[in-house]
Length: 348
Image (cartoon, rainbow, N blue to C red; front, top):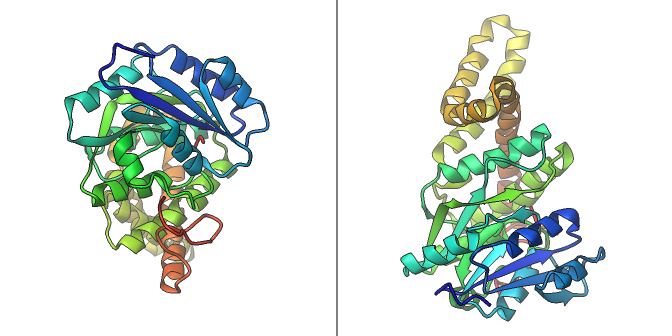
């Protein structure tokens, strides 16, 4: 226990076969100064002995015999925690040494804030291009967004335990790492609670992203269910990935493809895709400058087609989601497996 902090922070980590990244996560939590009030690890049906590693580290371990997803695991951890604040930390991140202190100080300084979240740092662990691109993109989006937030992020997100339990926690119908944190954020704001984006709170992501894992996570686990959630609420918040510039970029990316096809058939039409491409570059110039400064011009040039592809498949997901919603097969609390939620009651 830690008697230094006035605000008791319980760290809750859901884990399913966490491997070496989970060991690094635990090591960073143990090295925190000041230390958390407690570390609660929820072993979500893991089969690689992650629960033993957590137990040996001195963490309090809760074991779930079958994997039910991080939403259920986090809810179980929050119910069993004893701190005033529950800080959810993914099993594939490491926290900074002063992380617990930053969380506690933020809540103590602003009694009107009920939840907060941070971002990934600008030094991702994995060196391959897609891991650097994906994690740095996340960092930039969070670092350039408004501090008064409309959503929540569970990879590094803290909430007052009493508020969290009163709202029923995460929607457990989301059985994979999905948008359960975004959905919780919307409910927090709808209930009149404030959420703060604490930009100084940054964790290091240890995940390796490849083509398949990135596209699957972005399209199936984020864009499609997020579309259903947005349409069920009937509103767009100009926040994080839903800023107006991003929505315009999606439209431009969809116009660019047929414009290119047309230009290949009719060379006189090349000014159209050129204008569309230049507009996309201008709209997203701050992001591309960020990549240029951090990783150089060659890296920044590689980012552009991947970022435009991201806009394209985000638009595709929205079109599919809108069609499903209109046909009555999708709604805000929809599970990834297609079964609807009955209500709101790992690393990503």
